[in-house]
Image (tube, rainbow, N blue to C red; front, side, top):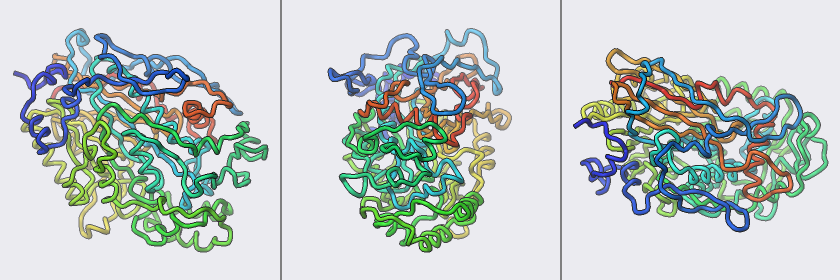
Length: 586
């Protein structure tokens, strides 16, 4: 019997791998485990009597495709041009068939069976906007240094969780959704506050997105500095004057108020990104100066243009991996700093602490325990693993961050050898493989030596892409980092069938998307990967007087749409959004 079984058939029988997973010898089989769980239907979010969103169990997935809640139904959009622009519900994005790796044969829709369906989150960037180590003062050099929507990142992420909970099934196959994978930059400043918010967002809990003074916001948005949008006042800051940003009284108090995440009603897995591993997303961890500054009572909020350009140019070229110039900058500008309330919770977390937090039973939610990471990972302080997606599909999560300090990535030789072993084992078992990482093939160009493994070679994106192309089981490489939708075919070597690299936009920059990925067997010698973009559950249209949790999530999207310096190209072309990606069976 062919090993290529539908999800429905796979759920009917426990194979050897499922039994191993159930006994703890392997990671939880996400697809089978969820399908077999009591009451294992997807969950939905609906209006409570008071009009707020709440979590509830949804009915079983329908027998027909279900595009509601995806960009196949509608997409938040606004007018082009200058000035502050209001969002509304716009036309849907069509599905594009891409056949660069194999021809799309007629009649496949009637033949196909589902092998797996899951959701990708990436680059959530849950931001502690009051953190002393933030370099907002570089905003004039790079739009990513500070965004006017960042104070609402937790509300936006919770609304994305609510959207996934509301989906009744996969939009093409109507298969149950089996898990969510986050592909890194879950946090922004390598801060314990942010890690706690991320884990509670994903698994459920009450979150107060505030640090320092428990009663008041202490950051750049009430500083009076015109470089930043001052939402609560009439001050003519640059965003109000040059971009028409509104005054919203009570914005900052609402932004740091407690909110609640229902948590995902699906199992979820975690992949690490450079902002999770490195202070500022680019400096080597472990410096005691940065650790003390993070929890201390001073914050630099403005800097002369010449100094900010020099520091950012250095970051872009990777010339300061240890943060020496950044440390010197902070030390030389002590008198220009403003006082803030110290907070030990802002301390940076180590890789071991990141693993331990995922393994904490308080954050298990719907599972699995550790969200992919195991006690073996904790003992070895490694952040890569495999997990069972469905009966015939294996997931491989990689750690592409650079422990030596750089926002671009690479792999060490030991991890590369481990990956080769996993791919060879999958080939012997007749499995398909989906690889997850934070960095894309084009952003793994940093081959600097890992200071913790002197003499070990580092391997870049071109080498990894070629390696994956040599192995028949690989169907897809799913990643983020670039904050842009992009889908790239990799032809691979003869006999492998090639694979698709699927890079998804962030959830901090507009258009703030996640992605559903479905894997199907067309029973004609080809497979299809269907990708469908989804937005959060927040309404497209905002109301400046609505500072509820839902209203803030809507405002998060609209502010991102209007953010000065934002790129209008991040949604990609139609062929990078809702697609059918055809490839040969290897």
